[in-house]
Length: 240
Image (tube, rainbow, N blue to C red; front, side):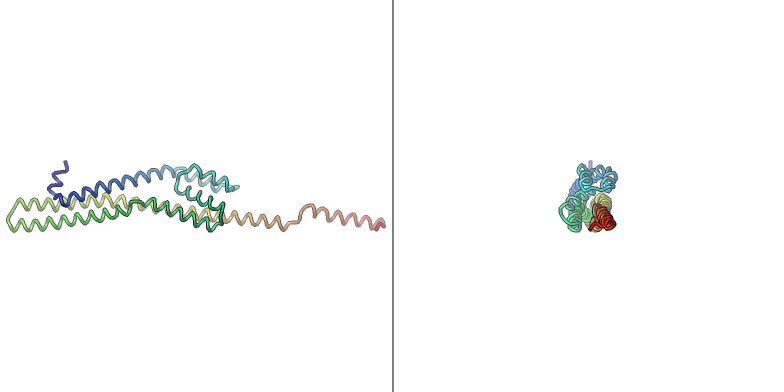
């Protein structure tokens, strides 16, 4: 079906474009599958985040809320909490951001190759156009009408094929980059939110402990007036 167009466009120029088209299509389908799974896993994110930040807050309960989720944002927060259980808050945040960076790089897989394919597609289309025009001038000089028609087909078909390949690679690339940027914003905002939340929890715990330390034991408060009262009774009775 498409073979006559390949022949008319010139196999030397059309075959690389066809090969890159299949290659780009495979990358686009792989990324589509990745983002479909991402959106499925992200459906319960809001509900899970509500459980993580619920009050009264407990670290063990917050970690349990993250266990069943496969959402990248929730997995990053779980990594944050796991590290926070063993190390200080700044170190736990740093490790969580490294984990988030790995998830972000995973979301950008093959995007660089799609960029390369889009650039090569435009170059091949332009090259085919230039070659076709040069063939036209040569055929005109030789007064070869058949050669002119063949040269025109080479210029037109390679240009159209290059443009189609460029669009089929660039438009999905733009879409996937936008999704990756949204994921980056979600990861960054939720990590910062959890950090601020944990800082508040630590301050509340410190204030509670300071109040307990500064307050005298109830037994001593009760005992002191009792001892004073007994001494006063003894003095009134003349007992030393």
